[in-house]
Image 1 (cartoon, rainbow, N blue to C red):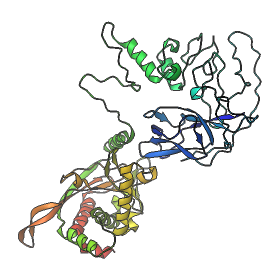
Image 2 (image 1 turned 90 degrees about the vertical axis):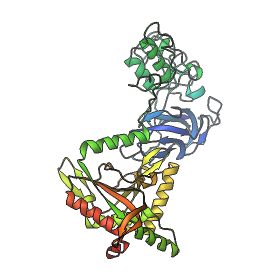
Image 3 (image 1 turned 120 degrees about the vertical axis):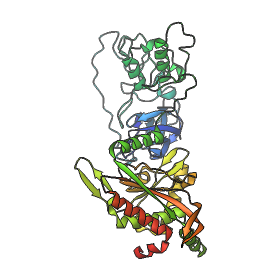
Image 4 (image 1 turned 90 degrees about the horizontal axis):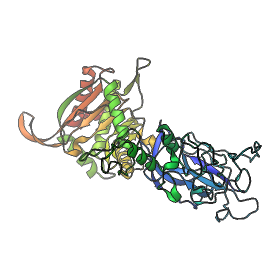
Length: 490
């Protein structure tokens, strides 16, 4: 007999607790191999393809594209292994050559073990009409026989189980193994099947005192969806006699209300939500201050032109600015640090992991160039190019978006001169670079047109005073105006 194993959304690392389904890579009925990617999800940090640790036939998927799931929620079920008789599965699907051994680690902190041995469970004798009767095929029958993994006559999927355990179908005339006369997920007695697949839907109904038996599901085969429950709750709460008050079909997350006419509500989730949380925390915890200075970047632009004319890979402007930053941090290590508020200590860091702000279609992201202090301008340029392309395509990994110790923000690409950057918590400082444009400038005692840039430094006033911050910014400006100053640190 084939075993139906449930695969749950694994731990994606970096403290992430939820992810949004962007695109399913498999359909119900598809045969999957061990560690084959089955779904693409978006976290607050990156897009991730999630591999399935089991090999077999996909019997059910949980969640439509656009659905947000918490870590540990069911993703899909897979029928693993051939039936004992060698016959096809009960739904007519050919028996898969599944691998019940499972894979090793799946993403972060998630591993699978061999499928557990099947055990017979002693059931209490049936004493009344409300007793649960075994499904056809034995008390532990797990072969799906209906769309979405539902048993005939139920219209609902089997109940969730822990990874690596069997998922038993409900008995005929029941939903999720609940027999007539027992209590459904909403906490009420049932006289028949309640086609609900999601425990979140049951909880939402239970918390709001809604009887699921009164709802007509809009899903496949009458399946009750979260949208059905929310629609019913809005209908019950709508003022009597208000036309169209209960006609809104757009599902709303818990705690949200429908937008008034002429008002658009945009959910703060995913990358946008993560940015909002981080910026808010920075403003709450970090007493920041900003200083700025104008610098003549004419010689830096000439030096870059000469470097690129000499042949070899092209050197980008941001690569030169990054090299200047690492040299400045070597002289002013106070700014490459973080604050341990619990221990009341400033933690100075030896390695410089340089983040840089990149605007993408998904929002603002900050990829991190690891060990920037050990790289030259050419190596920095290559890594900036690689990470920027990954940011544009949405393929940055969580590791490439975390661990920064100092951030370089080139907002000059937006055509602005200055800004007061918000420190990227838990870092201690951020250097902002405005656009480089021709301006009148006094050069060697005469008025001339020079390429001028405004540099600004926002810093955590707990790690240093204005003298240190001013010294750092002045050194950066000196290197911009006279690139030869960098030769002393090469």
